[in-house]
Length: 416
Image (cartoon, rainbow, N blue to C red; front, side, top):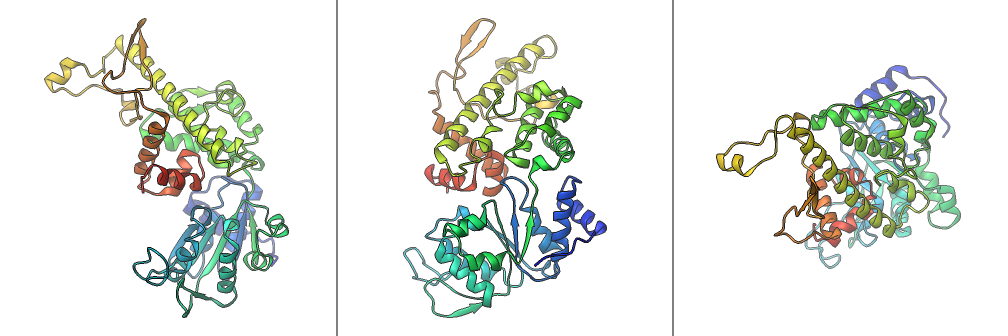
């Protein structure tokens, strides 16, 4: 279905404000306008774009501007659900349908009846599940796993993918008939590198959010940094930009950042590692070994930077107001005095190494054996889950890894 190129300034501005979308590039505005235009029309929509480009906002716009806005909106990451349970998750199952099915369970389609389902990473669906999904799109009917009763669901489907669907169809990995049913209307999300002046706007917004969240002085960016922001290609898109800005906001709080400082956080320029995860995995997004090594390296380098920052703060404060929690202050019951800029910053400190200060070496905790990288990784994931209230999608975004990798790590470390 080809939509007319119409201008909806009030609706587009309302959608941007409501869902916190930053930017004014023509490509972005056109994508938002298409989402607003198709929202009242009950058609399936396929959202395409690179990983990290912000595809998840557009199903929310479509649902929020549709007649279904008061019904349920359910987002499902198809790539994060094991192949053996995806049918049960989507369509439900009957008691005794398989080992572990101790009770009848509703699926997402039954739960979202009358509302909207967002199928993220839809290209990851197994072919058998694709056949079930096609039936829902064609007739609104589905059958629970282990049941013979046909049920109906009045659900609007919005799907998203970063995969070349035409290529997936040609290679037999995705059903051609399902592809055409899903893509009745297609919305293409522009990559960050094509959004020009939006990039400095986003960087400024992320820096302000970080400063407010952790009560730290806000970083600013000079003209050379803004030029580098727009010149760099950002293979990880908005997700990568946010990670880079948050690193800078942490280690350069209150400073005016120039291109030299920014360049040190970009891949290939001695960056600390957070920014490189998506860049290195761009051509092979499911290279788990690479992601694991990068995550471990990121944790170690971040710990070293935290230790360095603490050493610097100790040295600077020794000439002014001490804030180290000494034995005397603890005995007296006095609370340690901390600079306001780091009061709410509580990094994970494992005894990875000894700290050198004034030429002397001392162990952080001689009674505790050095933590392994696996222990550090597990603790990092646990704390990230706590900060995000157990929301795995938000946790994966914070750690800059795929949700599939996060699910695997949670299972591996027994954190379920």
